[in-house]
Amino acid sequence: MSTTDAVAFWDSVYAARPAAGDPRPNARLTEMVTGLPPGDVLDLGCGEGGDALWLAGQGWQVTATDISAVAVERLAALARSHGLGDRVSAVRHDLHTSFPPGRFDLICAHYLHTPLDLDRATVLRSAAHALRPGGRLLVVDHGSTSPWSWNQDPDLRYPSPQEVAAGIALAPETWTVERADTPRRIATGPGGRTAEAIDHVLLIRRTA
Image 1 (cartoon, rainbow, N blue to C red):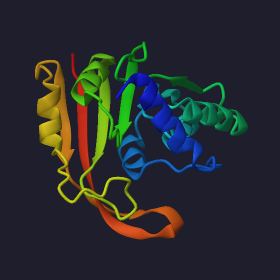
Image 2 (image 1 turned 45 degrees about the horizontal axis):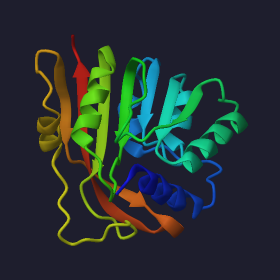
Image 3 (image 1 turned 180 degrees about the vertical axis):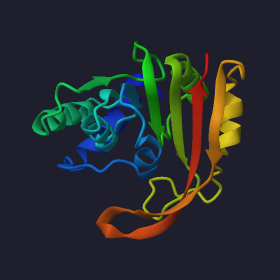
């Protein structure tokens, strides 16, 4: 699928939903980041913008990116309406072809899954190289299929955090895996429906 088709696909996904007035941050983000000193953070695949807004509210300077111009424009408007326009820079990037410039203290990739072509290992390797020394890369993936997921393929297999780390293939003398596990939680979907969900959590720190 071409870049143009991918942009059109994700624009249509977000355009089909009403804009969220107060999107919530991901549970693993708040769990992992609370208590860290604020700095510069990059949100890969910002979507509705809940993570970016929460981070900005905690004092982080946020660069938030998504392939969808609809998602990016909505986030920029939300940030302004929440009085966080000076802390959130919402920019469109197709991570298949470009990566946001800069150096960051934290880079988050929550549920960066797509039915389209995306070399995730290359994207996450670029993210690791964009960290400042001491900075962290937080990757949270689905480890199970929720009843409301867009992908209900019964044969779908979710790579483990260890497999994701191996695929990124970072030099151990420069990057350290600080966490790689599969916690469970009760997730809430559309209409308030709940179900147990498994997350695959990978936290990598740049040590040099």
